[in-house]
Image (tube, rainbow, N blue to C red; front, top):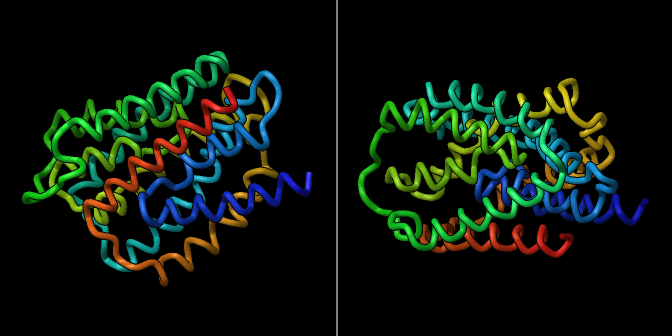
Length: 255
């Protein structure tokens, strides 16, 4: 047990770094980590997703408050998109609670694979560049609901969808990652609430695993914001894809 907690604290540190660099809030790190290290039994993937959502509430909230105080949040990309994201999160969380554990595992891996291929092959993500462009009404409404539904269903926060979206709207990686933290917050709050009190497996949030991950991530977030040097934009985008690939391998290895 102590070994597992120590591993979770160390991997929580990694989660903190990814929160700062990529706006993950923990999702694409904590789901594979909890699934591989801590979760057991027939509802292991549900526990991983629910615990990931709980960790993201704290990480995303802390990052959002810091970004707000520094004046780095751009309202035109956050509202009303965040409202539609929250609406989609209700749908996705309810669906996840009713889904078989094996389906969650499969779709998590499939979605990771699709995102990696899309980021590598579709223009605009790796190269970046151009003037920032506003979000259209269809992207804000239908896109926001879709982001919330998929992200809460898989317990990944919104960053894996909002970072590519904002990147292709012309934002540099550092700004796209920053925007993803407040956009992940409504997903995390809705998903955690429904995993605790909604239909589906009971006890789908592992409080010990969540506490261990936060013990590593919170001080790391504070330190990383002070000491991490700026990353060249293209290298930042390549590292984002590389981390998604590592998360995919972690999920597939446990199988």
